[in-house]
Amino acid sequence: MILIQCRNLSFAYEGTPAVRGLNFTIRGGDYLGITGENGSGKSTLIKGILGLKSPQDGQLLMEGLKPNEIGYLPQYRAAQMDFPAGVYEVVLSGRLSGRGLRPFYSREDKRAADENLDSLGIGELRNQCYRELSGGQQQRVLIARSLCAGKKLLVLDEPAAGLDPVVTVELYRTLRRLNQEAGLTIIMVSHDIPGAVNYASHILHIKKDQLFFGTSAEYAASPLGKRFLGSPQEPV
Image (cartoon, rainbow, N blue to C red; front, side, top):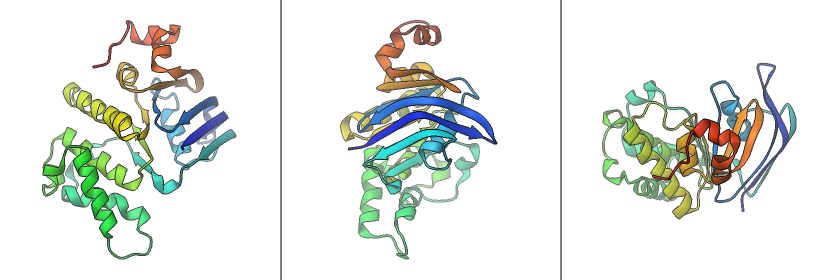
């Protein structure tokens, strides 16, 4: 069982405190939405969870989770749209980190790529060129690639950035299905607070300091949630 505990956790960015005094717990099967305004330290926290930054203070404890069991989807960038490769090749490349010294992909690697293409509903795109897909399709391909890299925890940094509202809702629904039906633990950074509340099970709201941690329902009912949401949210 996955268990991630943050105890009085702080991270710095270029020597300056970026997030500080964080105390929260993520358990297997949770879907945590990390929200906050721009510059609040969300991406720095993600880098810390991924082991790319060392804590300035406090403790980050992980149980039941190996580095090769974490899939990571960084912020979507326009340059990714022109990636010259086939869909299947992109998804399969998620297995590179776990391949070790083997020169070729194994049968298990290829099976994982096929399964993740199907789980994201894009199996029919496997032979298409990645750069010819729509933005929403490309993002699904990248999520499938991330799932090939890690099967227990999926970490996403602003996955809906640059996507239109309709595609954003489809993406959120896909992530919720992976969480609820496949039991995938998800950590998603998003400045879209209503979207995070609608689909995530828990909310961490930060502004360098921790302003809130709890269930999405508790957040929606809190003074902070009411201030940012404006009105009660209903899942789509």
